[in-house]
Length: 274
Ligand SMILES: Cc1cc2nc3c(=O)[nH]c(=O)nc-3n(C[C@H](O)[C@H](O)[C@H](O)COP(=O)(O)OP(=O)(O)OC[C@H]3O[C@@H](n4cnc5c(N)ncnc54)[C@H](O)[C@@H]3O)c2cc1C
Image 1 (cartoon, rainbow, N blue to C red):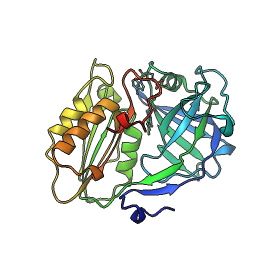
Image 2: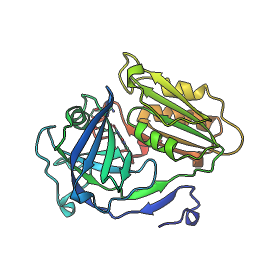
Image 3: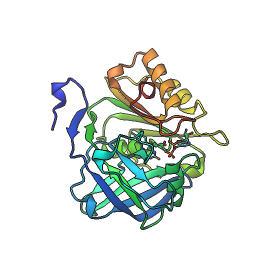
């Protein structure tokens, strides 16, 4: 375990054993018309580990939703941009060793192979799961939290809500299509969840998240923590607003999870985190 004190970062980083697992769908549940829960299992799941709310893995998809899954030898794979494989990032929503199931909550859309796979997910279909490589555990002792997501960030946002202790003020802003796309979130005193509906607008084209955050006075009472996972342009607008209002950059953990018009967007690229 790597101590965060060593780097001065408030995020504790725990290196994990990196393995590529072939897993099969055991259950599919529609959380809403736009999000499907996919529970994966199989003998390869043995030894799986993750600890942080936004821990994520590389998921290998078949080229067509009902096609066979061909996994590479890791030594022969040249990374997520390797055109021979369809690989996208997904958050570990839950992994409970006793039930031996790894759960992903996947946005359904028609624009890319992963979104289409989610729409057709069915028991018995297979996915490859590589990672997480590192668990990142953010601070849970801040005075306030601001959580920002669209459908793709909702699994991590939910994980945050489940892990935060009672006490800090929590504001969560979630952009979805409409009321039918809202899902049940953990509830407790001190947590304000605001659902923002894009209606007929295309995902990734609105300023709903940026405008909602801009209308929120920066909470007082001590240092806070901001986590965001959503379309990259939306995340960038939120980040700009918060830094202009003096929120310490070291308290921002914000990532563009996808970018409008870009296939296989690299969330580690400078533009994802600018
Ligand atoms: C760290 C991390 C964690 C993530 N966790 C999750 C998660 O738990 N659940 C989840 O659903 N997603 C998650 N994502 C986002 C997911 O990886 C992307 O949405 C991915 O691009 C989808 O792949 P695709 O093959 O469907 O589309 P791509 O082939 O990547 O893109 C094709 C087209 O689809 C568009 N597109 C991509 N995603 C969406 C979308 N959600 N809505 C509308 N249009 C889209 C692109 O702009 C592009 O024009 C995460 C991303 C990161 C970086």
